[in-house]
Length: 284
Image 1 (cartoon, one colour):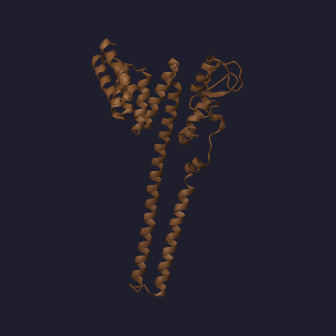
Image 2: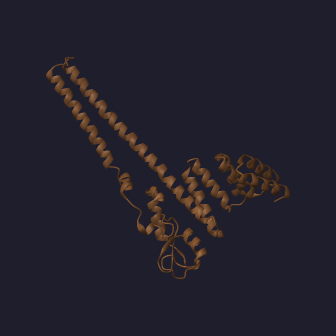
Image 3: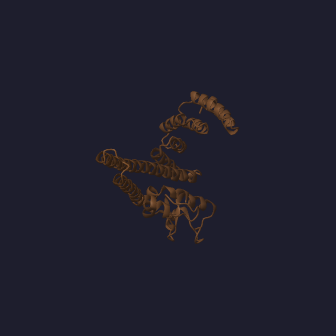
């Protein structure tokens, strides 16, 4: 980085720390003009644009930083945040996962944050699917309800025609009351059938997260579990953080090192399948 670009970046950092994000954005932009091949300058400005909620501009900076350095963890991390803000959870999940795996490669202190971002993206992906499912279900129910109402009006019209408009007669009133009653019962039955035929929604209300999917350190649902030599499973990011403080198994207190950890692939797939259908579990 050129001396002039570095000086502008440092000045921008001071404004950022003071909460003057607009001035920081301007100064990072001037630093980029001095050194447009430095990916860190783009991630600095991307971080500022997150504070300013300039999501599209943030994405542009992230993509530019990744183009210059495709292992730039911060580029993917900020990109995922901006994509989530713009309601693009599928893209955000891919970006968050890339940031997470880049953290693992470098033993980054941001691994836990990246892991939480992955879970947040999974939750928002599920929420988007759930909203679409409910919307489509509501549209179908409305169409069927409208059909029953049209059928009722058609039958009432036939009664009026048969009785030639003399609706005050006992026969006419009884026939119309019967049509109204049958129509009401059909509507109620239809709504009941739709409520009972929504197993995913019923499952969401009643189901809890299985204990074996819960990390015994953070007590959150896992997405990248590892298993120890003693058979205990933990979320990778939380056990790595724990081992930096104490080289022991949190449950057994026996000696444990990073080399003793192995991916628990079967549990990882089970957690992924569960979260795909139960995104609410992220906040369990």
